[in-house]
Image (cartoon, rainbow, N blue to C red; front, side, top):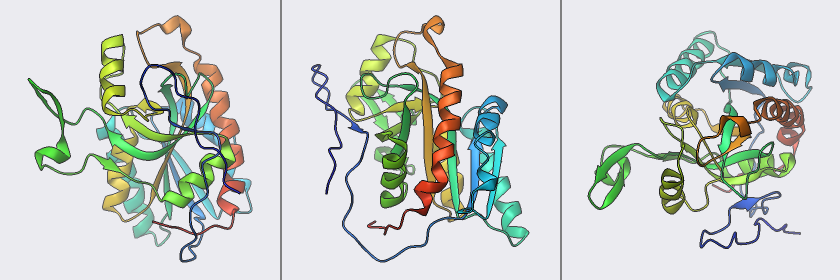
Length: 258
């Protein structure tokens, strides 16, 4: 049975993002589930929150390493690449990288405390500004501007975590105005959240031939900056809870369709 993937239209002309329980995909060739995970966070508070889920005790996993690589795409890419290269050189390569942490959520699909899982990992401000508007780096012919996690795996994880599922934006500057929010949602109407590291992690993982997911919990709503409304503690607690459910999600027997 196929579950409903969407929330009602928010009424502002913006299409609704996938939410809750993504639909199952058509079956394809069988693919093994990942058992050796590298989880990349930005800061120690996120690392500690993931480690509190005690993934290393899960029978479904053979090895788990959680690192805090630093804030922003460059630090995230460098930390991920170094960790993957060292594991490969030691003869113990990882078979999945997860970019993890807290994020700003786009209303109404990803409220504070909610889990988000990336359908695509998008470099939302990598490109050029022109009189006609923003031009993504891919349209400039200078490289890729998004990475797609394994479709079936990301859907299974989103379903297991009860997550909002859609594009997860990577930005170098956190959104803090209604104008910037409108500009981003205009270009990415299905976006569920924004953060600062996912694309860097995904770039490094792709360069090493390792699949990548992005899982984040929402600490604040994307929009005019209001630190008093942020709920970082709640988001970190939700991150621990989400990763506590992850081993069971990875054990689900499924097949890739991408």
